[in-house]
Image 1 (cartoon, helix red, strand yellow):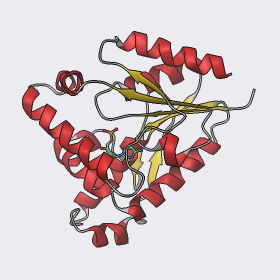
Image 2: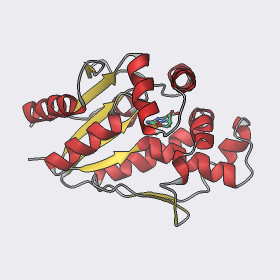
Image 3: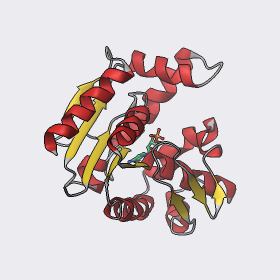
Length: 220
Ligand code: C5P
């Protein structure tokens, strides 16, 4: 069978990464975390003295960093100019700045090209997770899933991941980031018309994984 392409989009805290990785592992597919790429370019900008609130400065620098993503779902990797970035891209500083950087059209064009190249070269197929995969990056994906959950459930999941974090502050930061990602002009966070929406609020991770694996199976 031809390589299957699965697009999984949705806001933060819906279980996108855990679901995507597990589905890719179970089905023997590659995996791409596109949020990690936007985090990586943001990390590079912060390290190189770019004012991330200055869209012109960000646009001019967008082509400079060399970003390489590994696609093994059991151990995804990402390097920037040859340096391992998988730890530093998860800091609060990067998390709070990434929406400003990812809203810049030159950044999106650059990263979208990388994503398409990776998806095209995945011989056995790939699960790609993000915000605009089904709408913009891979509009011809075989299966499109849009994960949602209540803000309370999403904040609780995120809080559980970050030790010692405050639930109310996490919820506020998360709502702010989603509003920025949904409100930007260039390929905002959105559900594609032909995506299947799965509300994960009342589901366990295992149930979400099973649901997506079933949907992929129906299409193959
Ligand atoms: O998924 P994650 O929380 O790592 O994504 C980090 C940020 O990267 C998002 O808040 C969003 O600003 C940006 N992003 C994006 N388009 C994608 C994936 C992520 O703009 N396809």
